Image (cartoon, rainbow, N blue to C red):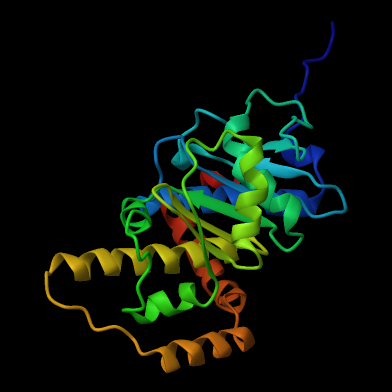
Length: 256
């Protein structure tokens, strides 16, 4: 009588570094859902797997963000081709923006693209993000814009998007949404937290109808110089463990 077949888990198939990347990326998806920034199944966060290969993790297409787990993330190459047997698949069109940024920026180990209501509202404004809050200064210190070209399906748009992003870590996709890049899911998430909050503050301030008080250019320039010495990444290192503890208290299944 043959012994029962034991299916090998994803965790058993991948190196420890990849598993940690999976846990952190799954946590980022859960946190986006927790803060109400998700758009059903229609945005993405991608993370590069540690190592010399350009291999990436992306959410399974059709899975809600609060359902994503470390094991369910799909491993793909830069062209979006699956690299590991999985019952799930990705939305190739959804990887268009991410693959462009990953290919152009070796430092962009995580790319987060969201369609938040506040972000799109600011992205629809001619003057974009205004220097009216301390939160806005963090984003304005490294902010780029990319004009809307329709649904992000055209490969020809990639070089224009990459050129617009340059070396910046924040981007407002006009009429579309927000994008942040980081050296880890923690850093990309913290950058998005700051950018989304700056957008929300702007919409709230504008809704009051009163004339807004902007922050003077010398202060903005000073903050930009300070942030070159004190990066958001350091803040992410401090905030991320607490965010993981929050998730563990709510639902630790993202680690599965």
